[in-house]
Image (cartoon, rainbow, N blue to C red; front, side, top):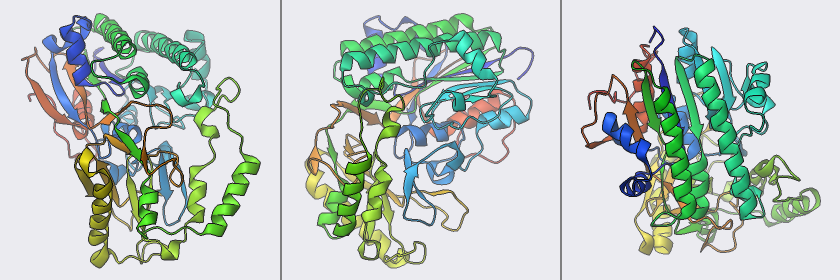
Length: 476
C-alpha cells in the first residue's frame, strides 16, 4: 500500500448483527446501511471462547488462541499452579502492526485490548482495556503529550462494576467514548497512517448491563453513536482507501452464571485444603478493602483481591481439574506435565472431560447443549502462560462462569452479581468498503476471526511471514 492509500480498521467491541438489523429497519443507522450497500458484509465467527482477550488477539495475529496462548483475562503461569492477569507480553504471536512497522508502514493503533504495555510501532500506539494507567499505555512515551493535547479527557476505559451508581457509570462511559473518538479523528487526519486501527467499546459496556430484546433505549443510543462514528470515517475516506469494520463477538441474553469449581468440588474432582482456605480468608480480611467508586480508587477492577490467591488453597495431589476465567476454562492436573499431576493424559483425560460435560449437563441441561472443547497445544513449547486444556461451552455461552469468584459464589447457579443481562455470543460483525470489495451484493457471507489478519496484510501489500490459516475476504 502506497501513494497515500490508507487501510482504516474500526473495531466495535460487542457489535451484534441482530441489533444492527433491527435498528437499520427503523432507519436509525443510516451509515451502516450506506456501508453495507457500498461494500460487503459477513457474520464473523469469534474464537472459542468468544471473550475479548482471545478474540482481539486472534483478529490481529491470524492465529487461534491455542497458538497465541491468550484465552481470558487471567491465565495459568507455565509449569506452575499460579494464576494471574494476562498482558500483551504473554502473547506468543506476531501482531500485524509489528510486521507493518518493520516493513515501513506508518501505523496508528488505538485502544486495542491486550496491548499493554504499549509496544514500539512506526507511529503511535495507545493501549486498550488491559492498561492500568495511561502513561504506560502510550508508545512512544513522548506521544503522551500529543494524546492529552488532542483529547485532554482521554481515559482507557469505564466498566459498570467500577461505579456504585448506574447514572455515574453511563456519564463516565460517554465521556470516555467522546474522548476516544476525538483522539481517533485527530490521528486519522494528522498522523497520516497507512494502517489505522481503533477499537470502540461502548456497545459492549452498555449491552452487558442493558441487553434486552427488542433493544433498550441505552443500547439503541450506543448503536446510534457508533453509526455516527462510522459516518465520520466514511466522510474521510479517499477513493483509494479501504475500510474494514469488525467486532470481536456479538451479544445475547445472559441466562445464568455457574460456579464450576463448586461443581467440580462436589464431584470430588477438586479438593481444597480447609486450613489454607481459613488462612487466605484471614489475609483478605486484613489486607483488602475494596470500594466500587472509581473516584476514590481510580484503578477500578485492578484493586480486586487477586482471585489467583485462592488457587493456593487447592490440594493439588488430590485434585484432577480446576476451572478459571469467565467462560469455563478447564485445567487438567496432568501427570508428567504439572508439578503434582495425577491424571494420565493418554488414558484418563478424555474420560475426565466427558465426566465434566455430564456433570454440567445434569445441572444446566434444560438451558441448552453443553459442549466441552478440548484444546490441543504443545506442552513442550516455551511459554510464559499455559492455555487451558478445555473450554466448557454452556448453552451457546448464554451461561457463563462466576468470573472473578472461582471459589466463591452465592449459589452454584444464579444471576450475575453486577446485574448484567447481556453476555457474549460467538457471532460478530464484519463489513468492508473500498476498491478491493466492490459494491454490495446484499448477501451476508460467513467469515472467521482467523480471516482478518491475512486480509489486512493483503490489503497492505505485505507478504505473510508465516502461512496463516485464515482465508482472504476479498472475492467471497
